[in-house]
Amino acid sequence: MGTGTDLVWYASYGSNMHAERFRCYLEGGVPPGGRRACPGCRDPRPPRRAAGHLVPGGVYFATESRVWGGGRAFFDPDLPGSAALRAYLITTGQFADVVAQEMYREPGTDLDLREVLDTGRCALGPGRYETLLRAGDLDGHPVLTFTAPWSSAEVAPRAPSAPYLRVILAGLRTGQGWDLGTAAAHLAAMPGARGRWAPSEIAALAG
Image (cartoon, rainbow, N blue to C red):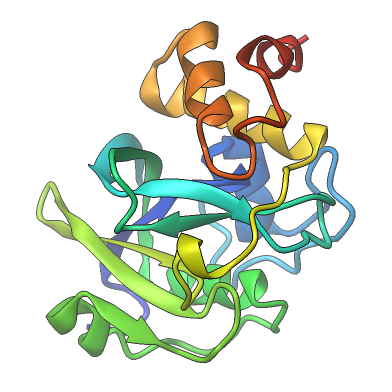
């Protein structure tokens, strides 16, 4: 697989859970509250479908986001519990262009997905979002995401910014169908946010 037209689920767990934020990766533009413009995908069409998806593992915040300030979200499949993801059914070409933009590279080159589809993991490089993971299957299509090559135990946690949390909070509520309190408590329990953001403070961001 990797012809550019095959379909995969891209499973987001950070700001891309917010549909308007993800639209900037497809069509180009600056997301609300962001600091950096996205060039967009070669194919700017919207996802065929979107669905909430729960997988084993967890999300944590670390390093420094150039777009939002504060810690970035990363997925660690070895953390206890469940990670709440929002999956978008897109082409492999669109997925490749989303990965490129997350790595601050120019989109336009398809990815060979055979290794991640066969083994569940593929390292494209040493960077923060250059490790592809397969997070199961959904309705006959593979679920793919990307994260850092390190585990949550190997990096210092860093508190996320208010604008970043606001976008993730909105994406969680829409993607999972959760109420405000459930989504805020879920975010407040994540490493990096835990002890730095109270559930009530995160809920207040919904404004």
